[in-house]
Length: 497
Image (cartoon, rainbow, N blue to C red; front, side, top):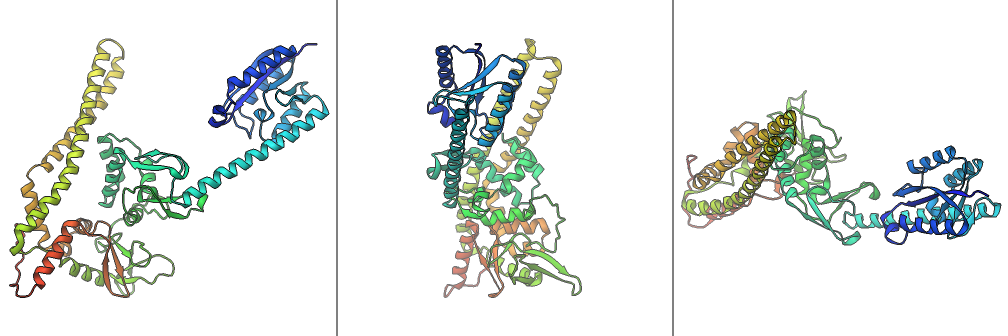
């Protein structure tokens, strides 16, 4: 009697492969069985990570081969669950194979589907395998759910982070790309377009599409939060380091119209400079703006359902100007302020130096790529057309890098003048804000209160979240100096510095 067969092997997970279920082990068992029992192997099918639930490409390929070779009588598998873990699907395939005169032989269990007893046992084992698989999936999902509820993201590391450890012990650290993504968030807060941010990141060596940038800017992971369907899209505090504060993240969402997840390029109204910047003290939601057309009055309001925060723009603007009046320098302690600003700008210069180093490193890489392209063209490795395209793209990137290095170089020079400029600006922030255009207002706001500011309607006052450290020192020293007993009247430093 002719006993021609195919061998079927399957590994659905790396765990199975690492724990004795490798394709080689399965094949060896089947080959030894065939040799002992007089089977002729006419083909071997299957592979790694083949689906256990639905007939994959490799299963279909094997069935197609069976239909072409009418001499095949059996399919050898090391174990039943290597054939499938979906009982209904597997039994359907077995019935279809039986109609073709082909039967399953499970070597380890010694089961042959050609007998009624064998088919019954096969069905029992397949149901057991399916239950085991479902049970394992439930445990896996339960474990991930518990991790996320406890603040640990246990999936793939987002761009900008390194990942170490497993499960509840997973630890994330911010890498160099993450530091650049932090800049992307700050650029967005300054009102810079996504197109420009993508261009700036590319110059620094991080290439991405506008769609990818949008996904990053709307991902709460970067604000130290975790959101996933496994926890009902609940937002929980993550244990990983954040690139920006959550209040800054919410302001970015307002800029991107993050509530809908779609781009909405709204025309900015200069009558509402505090839009996105002022947050509701009850829920931290950025205040939106509108105009009562009947009364011709501008308002800021919180859009959270049930919140009563709704205040006229006139009141918020007046109170904000009064708040800024507390941030000024006085001539009697001018030298002290210069030292404070010098120290703080030194920190900023350090960040600029890091960016300068990145740009120079990237420029060196591009110069190397240009040289290698020229060599490959000279020895005939690439055609004239390929050479021209490559050199054009590399030269364009080199030009951008040199332009950015030149801009950064001018920023790094003349620290003393920068100190004078900062002190001049600090001398009269309130007037600068009140009389400036929308861009100036936004710059002053983000400079003094980088995380935004809270408005408490019931107390009719602003509550600061975080002040720029330089202005915080100005405020404390100036206030103390002004309120000290016996102090002579103060004199503001002139704007010329």
